[in-house]
Image 1: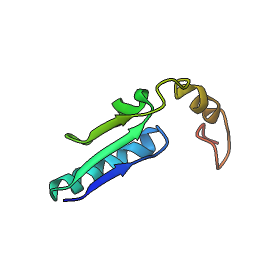
Image 2: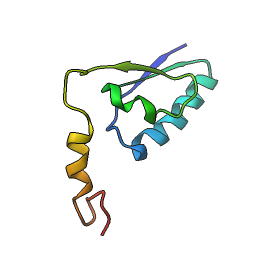
Image 3: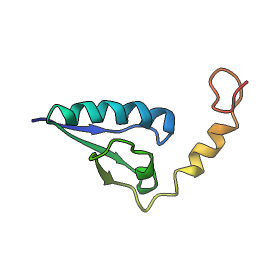
Image 4: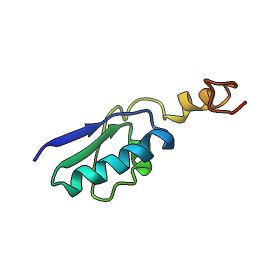
Length: 80
């Protein structure tokens, strides 16, 4: 049994696919743990996956994801 750690930006578009991968890994008998700021834990959709909070003394994640949502065009989260 292996233990996999998932580290990704705290955005649903990243956590959703990783949650599916974690679910498959756990179905195969492995462990899966997501590692991020405490406010990212609700994004985990994989039932039974672990969460290890880090950086709790840092500003909330929304402080850096909010500016990203205002970027327009191909690289932006805010659409065209």
